[in-house]
Figure 1 (cartoon, rainbow, N blue to C red):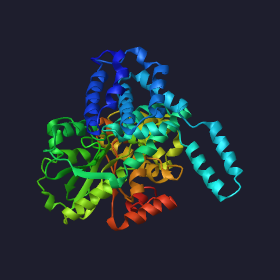
Figure 2: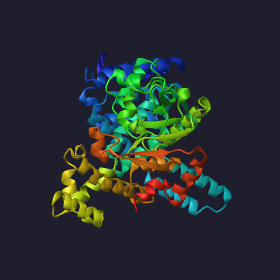
Figure 3: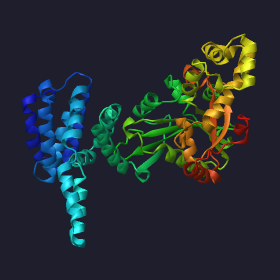
Figure 4: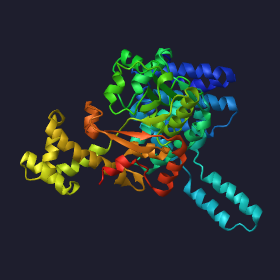
Length: 476
């Protein structure tokens, strides 16, 4: 920061004198300073990142006495410090929150004993209240204070995002992450979100974020983005009123006249002149979560259903709603089996056909080698490979599970939403990403409005995957 770091301790006193209306201005200024720090133009002296110093600031913020204004001022000060911390400093901050400001197990045991020894209803109720308080970590008050500040939700989201890669190494960090997730879940309830259409006329800063956050099909240029936002190509996003310039999740939609089977053709659409009022099908071809810190908080299922309702009410000509989706786990599942020479994944006829075609000893190893080349350029090879891969992909989607859920994350997402597994599309994505994750195969999930709830229950309650006859027949 431009000021001497030894003056940082004066901030609390300064903020104590600020009326409520000025807190936001002060916080916005702090955000600006923090951005400079994050770009390494400025930053904290390493001595301010020590464990003792950070622990003192956190303790002061949680336990210090005073009124609401002074409490918010201390929270702003601590938020300033956190935003200026280096990556190592933030890890130290997280470790302190996770270990030093968790529940006190001795106090917890005492409150449990009080409940067990309660002699009457009044004592039992008081003991229950005390036990509930003992189960609430002190850090919750700090996290709650952060969430109430302007830009505080974004701070918490980013804090959890930086925590997630470390949660497996430390159960305390995992618990801290869950504390933040629970708090964010209350803020990002579907009833508190606003659906907005993003158009080419939206602010440039927002359009830049679409390019940055697109996670399924890369937006390569401004012209590419513009083509995804013209009259027959739409984009919808959820926003929160405390983060008005940050889309939380967005979906891209193509209005067409048939079930799309190839993503490159859908994105080019050079010969398609349909206006929205002439289309009968809405294809959801890309859905991107933009905030890693909101992982595990359901937004996507509500987004698709909300957009379906929006489009249904605006365009009565739309009769069909479906996706053109990747199969991100297919190659990850099949590749190692083939590389190990596991012929059990193949059927006898497939094995004989592969051995006859390639004069090989092991059909699985040969298929693995073939799939490393430009195999789809050769018609005969592509025909043989197609019959094998399409069947195996159907098996992967319909039969491979993680617990009671489909192994493929995209399949699990859409099936949980109440969609039907409608069709597998051969060589639907010839991009490097498409070939590397699913050998180019993509899937249509169909949203039959009258059956969404029924399909959802079939999948969630009965673990049954609703699929079309055409997909089921691929297993025969």
